[in-house]
Image (cartoon, rainbow, N blue to C red):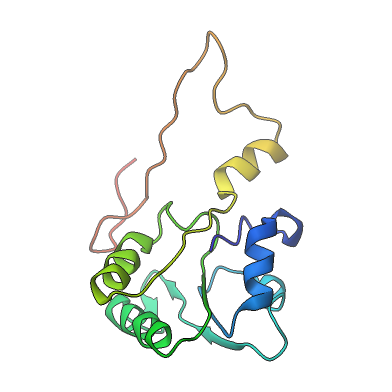
Length: 148
């Protein structure tokens, strides 16, 4: 589930509904606590945040946790900042769940690039000026910064 760019009122209605129905919320470090707190009061909250050079759980451990919770019949929300399919590890998580026979749903979120563009009133494309855009990460697979 995409948590959006950080503002609670930019969370989608579906994301909010699923948070309210979740038994367990597995969340990243970049998701604001105010959004994590929007889940059911009695929902278990499991931080699995990763920041460059500081991982509370490896990706393999996160995948195994999601599979275990799913097989236990828990209603799980895997809460990721922005949109789960932009610069996240959602592809790896989906593959692990699919291979394990655990059903899942992807709920998009507002990606930070779109929210920032709206905040600054900056069109990402403009007729006669630009017709496409590219999102790129600033780090390679080893965590090294990419050149300018």
